[in-house]
Every structure is written in structure tokens, then in C-alpha cells.
Image (cartoon, rainbow, N blue to C red):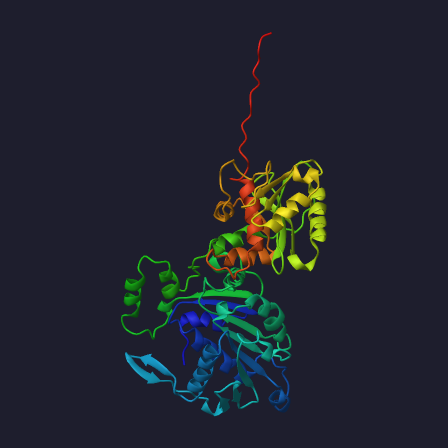
Length: 459
């Protein structure tokens, strides 16, 4: 079988990690199946030596997918290719491939746990990560891992650092992450970060990474009229660039644009101590139970504003007194010059209690935002209702205008901003709320006061 030019970009890459954003009908799964066969056939990365020792080397490749149905497709495809039964379009007709190494296939299991055995002792394990986060491949060494539909994983970032990369160490193996971006997936933002590391979207390419977009136009085996029909169906919609040309497009109902979140996540320390002449906002989203009490300190001396310190702990991890002490310590650090303001979320009675438990000096520098009202401590003009939409809009406007930056090490903040939707109550939002509270106060939320001019009278 001959790979088309788009597939060859990934097939010929020598990077440790390859990230492919393919269009529909690009042939991504076919590419992965062929790479498994190629690497297993030659045992790429296995120690060189005499034939006996080489044949005796236990060599594994792993075909991963978030769901078992997608993993099964890889198994079937490998079998079809090695038995000359893979359908391809040639000269307008459907024919099957002609495999020259049919003898290399020794055995195949197409029921769970699926695997393919080759002539030289190599084995391709076919597994899904949805059920156990890939634990079934833990403690094994692989020469190659191909992860189909990786963006659809519910925990790709965790899998990447603790499971995938460590499993490749023994053979200096290669990882291919392949899949169409899914704006509804919690892993979409991490997949986009990896895509950028490989040089995607015009970003500088980092060592060990390679990214490619896979256009359907690269595939010479498309059925007649496919391109024209796709353009007609999706004309004027952003999905067209993704479906036909393999562009990284985030389409969905997210409040914040993924690209803007990543642009604001820069290489800077996740903690910067107090600096003379600077002014600070401490925004607090309170919590009880399993929710997090999140404290974010923002330096708003000049734009871009900077997140200089964060703290996040589950509400039930400590007593309210310990949480309160943490707030007081952070305030004392940044209020050296009396330039620090607290904005406190007060949508419930528990958060109101934090306000009344604060020392008097801190209450004087605290503004409350929420349904709970505190006389003398508003976060906005009198008579205006406090709505969550207002702080979300403030956060989005500030990021859209490149008016704020934060450390790329703040993973929970990045993940929650990228995945936040207003209609999904299951999504964690504590970091979003705290962040947007600070953005709100620094822009639209400063109380509007009227300066009274003195009236002079003659005696």
C-alpha cells in the first residue's frame, strides 16, 4: 500500500511525539495501522545484535483509543492489510490491496483483549483507555503507541505524563496522537497545547514534537463528488475548515476561546511576591464540601495584568478557621503599602460568614459580589444586581484583549477556563469564578463614587 503525501508527513517524522489533526476521510486510522505493522515488523528501537537475540526480544506496540469500538477498528484494519483484503479505490473502482508480507501475520484476537502476533515475536496490543485510564498497559514497555481519537479522551493530560511517555522509555519509542479536535471534550485544550508544541498554528516547534494538519484533499482515494458535497453542506460554517482541511477549530458552546486561554498562559513564575509600588486584587471563590476554595492574587498595576499567586483547597480539607488564616496571610503579604483590595464571592451564607469573620481592617478593604449583600461593601454601583454573567464577560473581554497573563503551570485554571460552559453544572468552575471576579473588579466592577465638592459659605 502507498501512503499519500499527507500521511507521509507523520510516517516519516522522527519526533518523539507526533500530533495529527486530520480532516474526515484523511485516512488517519489506516496510517496508524500501517505504522503498527511497520514498527512491529522491523522491531524499531530494539537492541541490534545477532538474529537469535533480536528475535527473542519482546517487542510490543500499542493501539489505543478512548473507546473499545474505535480500538476494534484498528484490529480489523491490521488484519485486512496483512491478508490482502483492505478495500481501496483505484481508477474509480473498489479493489483490495496486495500485501507482500502476508506470512508475517501469525495470529490475531478480535475479541477483548485484542492483539496481533507477528512472525518475529512482536505483538500489537489493542486497548481502550475509557474504562481504566489505560491501566491495562501499565508496567509494559512499547516501541510505539498510536492513540486514535486522542482528543476525545476524558483524561489525556494525566495519561500523557503518567502512562504514555514513561512506557516508551526502554525502546526510545514514538507516540502518535491522532484525532479531530472536539470542543466538548475536557482534553481539547491539552491537545491544542501539544499541537502548538509541534509547531501547529504557526507556533515555534519544540524539540521532540511534530504537528501536522491532514487535509482530505491529500487523499487520492476520495469518492467522486465528496469535496463538492462537503463544501455545499458546510459552506459558511467554521466546521468546514476542520472537516475538509484538517484545521484546528474549536467549535462549541464554551464561554472562553481555547486559543485565547493558551495565549494568556505564558512562561512566567506561578508565584511572584509583593513588589513595591504595585497594587493588588485578591479574589476569593468560597466553598464548602468537595468544592475548592480558590484564592487568586492579581497584580493590576498595568496591563497586561498578572496572576501572581494562587491557592486552591477543598472546602472540607480544613476547618473554616484555617481557610480564614490562609486568606489573612496572603492579604498581609500583598497589602504592605495598603494597595490591596479583596473581592469576595457572596452567593451563599457560608461565603457571607467569611466576610464577617475577617478582621475589621480587612473588611474595610473588601468588596462583596453575590446575592448576599453587605452594607458598605458593594462590588458595584448601588441598585445593580450581581450576576455571574457579568464577571464571566469581564474575564472573557480581558483575555480577548490580551489584557491579562498567567503562568502556564496553572493547570487547573487553564483546564477550567477552556472547558467552562454555562449549561453544564458538572464542570468544575471554582478557579473560573475566582479568576473572573478579579478581572471584573479590575475593569467593570470598580465601585463608581461621586466626589462631593465642598460648599463654601460666607459668615
